[in-house]
Structures are given as structure tokens and as C-alpha cells.
Length: 304
Image 1 (cartoon, rainbow, N blue to C red):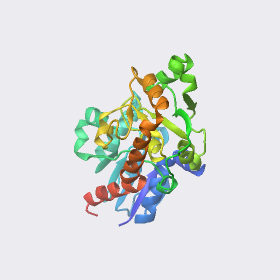
Image 2: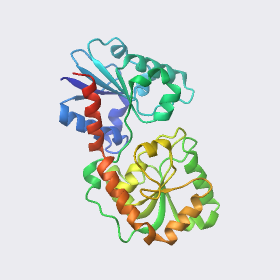
Image 3: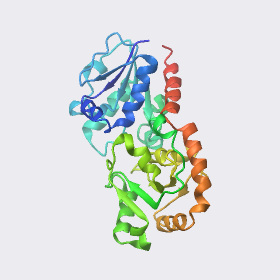
Image 4: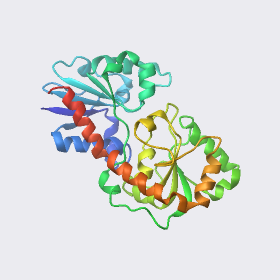
């Protein structure tokens, strides 16, 4: 089986830095190792002679256009690994999505509810392929920290695409309920990619919230994988992944987020077992190695 993983050219520089967009690169390296697939960064890829092509994040091709070499490809199975799914009204992006969904044999990714609502015509092609923690080897040897920083971490982009995070930051600025003494806010790239697991491990707890469209971001997996207590907004997709409230995480809402942070930091011993249980659960079910097993099942569907 001859295959290729095809990425828009913009990702070449990102991956060369060693940390930007590495969530995809780690998985692609595993695909390369297992199947011998080539990894191509190109806005005009050549699919001739391929049995299968995994097209990643097609809306990032130059001018958001799907290359004609993909649209006109024959005799090759196409897996549309779409990355971020919403287009936020961008007409070029929406057309890109339509063309790729028409062309592909399988569309895989997160945003299961959003896909079912906005792309119901293609739901027969959809395969749920959620996020994960990565790489496995940087997390698996971590232990639950017995002497962590007794604060909750809020990290990542804080903007209109993450309204709950923005809401928590507003509460922090107002020092609602003494939040400034309980919360640590760090930007997305506060630490290098390779140091991120150990950084998470230093905190007693950390917060994960979905974006605007209820997709599980990496923090839902990375925080418990690093041994920190997960405080998280509950979503249907989270239930689908097997997470149980008060077993694997402490659920938070806009109404109770301050009180939940106060509670876990005031009574840390009540949550140490949850940290251990959640860490084991995520290590066993939601690593890049688990997603590779899922990918193998998807690949087998194509009967190559």
C-alpha cells in the first residue's frame, strides 16, 4: 500500500519549529513509521501512483482552494482529516469544505455534533476521530505530583472562540471570590512543546473548556494525562469519550466555576484519588497510540 500524508505548505515552517501545530505532526510521524507513508507539504500535491492520501486541514491550502490535483485524482482513496471544522461564515472555507467532502471517501475528526448538524449530507462518510495527549512517552512516566503548586492553571488562547475561558479571565481580573490567589493564567506557548507535560504536572489542577462548537480540545486529555486534577466543562462529546463527572473530572459551569475552584483547593485530599483514576483512564484510552489504532480501523475500511 502506497500512501501519503498531504499538508498545506504553511505547516512545513510550523512543524520545523518543534512545537507549533505538533498535535498533528506527532500522529503523522507514527503513520510514517508504521505504514511507510510519505509526508508532503505542498499546495499542489501529486497524487499519481498513490493508493491512499490523507489530506490534512485542507482549508489552509493557498487561498483556501482545494488543489485541482486532489479534485481530479483518480484511483486513489482520500481521507479528509479536516482539523478545525467550523468556517465562521468564510465563503472560501465553506466551499473548500464542500469540495473536500464531496471528493473524499472518509472524513475524520472531532466536532461530532457540529458535523452532524452542518454536514448531515455527508454523515455516512464521517468517522469520529477525537483529540488525544501526545506524545505517549512524554506522559507515561509522569507520576501524580505529591507536592504541586496549589493553584489551578488556565492556559491557551483566550478570545471569542473560547468564550468560557474569556469569562473566567474576566472573573480573575475582578478577583471574584479571591480568584487571583487561586488561578494561574498562562498563554498558549508559555513553555516549549517538549516541556509541556512536566509543566502541567507541577499544578494541582487545571481547567479545560471547549471552544464555541463543543469540540474537545487537547487540554481535556493532556491535563489528566499529566496527573493534574481536571476541571472541565461537560459536553456530549466528553461523555462519548467515556469521561465521568466526579470520577475523571470536576464539572464546571459559568455559575459554579469559582466555587468549584475554591472547593478543590480547600480540600485537596478529597480529589487525589480522582487524579490517579483519571490519569490511568486517559493513559489507557486517549493517547496518540490509541488514535493510531483507530486510524488502522479507518484504513481497513478502504479495503486497500
